Length: 339
Image 1 (cartoon, rainbow, N blue to C red):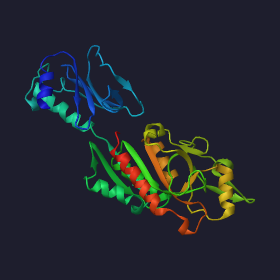
Image 2: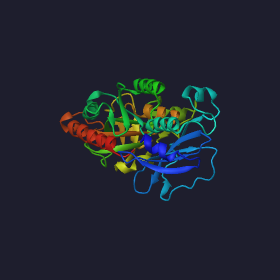
Image 3: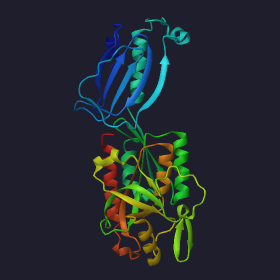
Image 4: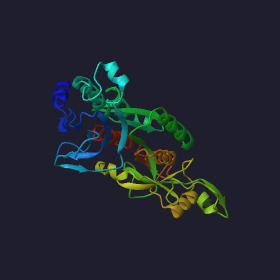
């Protein structure tokens, strides 16, 4: 690989070439010997090779003729990572034993570029759940591979049950290291016969179902009450996942979910929630996860497996084992997929 970089950097002309990684990630790289590197990563399709490619380019540079077959698939994840003007950095040149102008050795530059390439060619993905029980097979799958699959690093986070615990631990985790993607997985109760126990869904919108007041045999949420509040990132009363199109490849139906701090069992309360919000499923953590993802602008996916019908307390009618199995099979499929 180093020799390839060296060969491509022999002359001072901007050059464009491909590198196909072992995981079939393709990188397009352009270099110019003014040595000011602007490195960016963007989701592109390069011929039939990959959905996600990495484009490294140097400026100032003339018109770079991009190769045929490059198509933007998604502009939501473009990151300008860093800019280094090596040509003007006398200290860098002195430390590397290289000249300043067109004299930074090709070997030094190719080592630098190779390091950047290695840095860029992976993503950090945070997998969260309320309990170990819900994602134990996926945890085991990742543990056998030291938390890596392909070029991507996965970390699991068990937040504990409920919105407060979820909000705290997810926020703490991303403050330490901001992930490229987040996944929340767990079981849920279903309000809809369309999603019976054993079903898998992707939550496209979350509602806070118990943030408000009960009066006159009805429930008013904080939006009905007209209290002064920060409306960002709500869309109306919902927390809509704006990143769901990125995950359509997994074939999961999108649903509206409601987050509450208790499992709904009372017939009156269940009817109240259905009439007011028309949810498909309920959980105790989803809204907090959506809120953090939207506020921090981190693409996220919430996957739920239906274990029971909302209000059903006869656990012989639940399908917890089947739900956990289906959930983890899907999680492992997602982990294995081409991000």
